[in-house]
Image 1 (cartoon, helix red, strand yellow):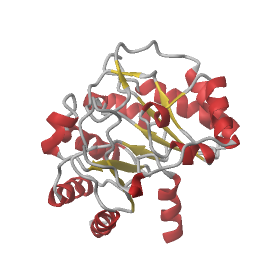
Image 2: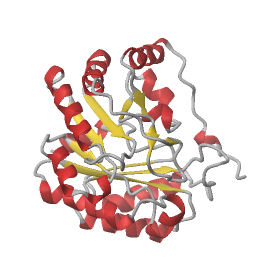
Image 3: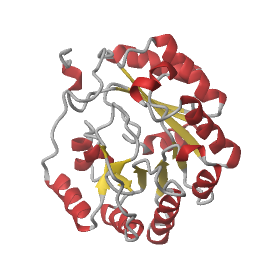
Length: 287
């Protein structure tokens, strides 16, 4: 096993603000991808009174080898969840909220209608809050994607996660071309909605393979990009092949801006939802 470098050490959430976040999550019976995916930034985010809500239960219908989210029998869709997400958003005072989900291949709409309901409930009581949704691929279903687009979230994100040649190992139930097509469809079917994607590095990819993903994303108009170090949640998950240096992440960031992404977050601890509001703030500062 490769020794984890110093730059990947993070603090544990333990302050009063973190306790407040956990209290609100417990009160409204909500899950977060922060906890379920063992995000290394959850201490920082909880201490900043923010979290990324994960809807549609804890059990995913896919078997990605990098992910800590539980694979198992899907849970019944919670009809109270949309209102509870909105109430938690209000209680935390979020000006920008990120909603993601487990993949629900078992549902006829692939879970898209729950995203719709969550967006609507947030808009009812937090009309000024910006909304980002991090969606699964909905198995490429255009109607499911259109359902979400019709609600006009500010950002729709879908992660490609890794390079095409690693999909069989890292995302065996997903398809790289389908993920690229989802991002293409977001831009084709919508006006004024930013698209976003993310990739992990350290899984054995080469820099040129990463740059090729940048090109694929830009060809379909992807606006925002996140690049972060893959960290194995346990020994049962796919192993880290390499710890990418902060200097290499800066190089990736420069190359991504050269490819004309509107906003790029690239560093070892970056995750797709980390400081997500910064993308739109960056656009505003430039304009």
